[in-house]
Image (cartoon, rainbow, N blue to C red; front, side, top):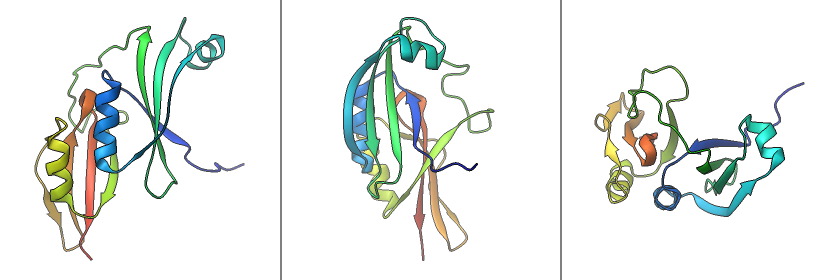
Length: 146
């Protein structure tokens, strides 16, 4: 048996409206926003009395979705350290291909994004950078140069 597709990537955020605005500015489309609670979600995630709001965002090509989750109960906790560097074990970043990296960085800065390092050229193939977005999420951007 094989995987049919990558259905979505889930990110827990502190401020759901700010995260929606950030990823909308990046070019994702808000598909749905809703509260989620109940025994079934408790059983799935292994927590009790879960109460969350989620927002499903879709990439422009429609093939990938991002699930943003704001926990009301139990409250979300911070990992150590909150703004962990890129070499900490575990899921560290998500990458998006963009047309104009400098324009995207400028627009995302208006939503609180900060460069982790700098925009750098990889050979004559890509411009690349890491940004720290809402809730400390590292978002990587790649602009193909060819």
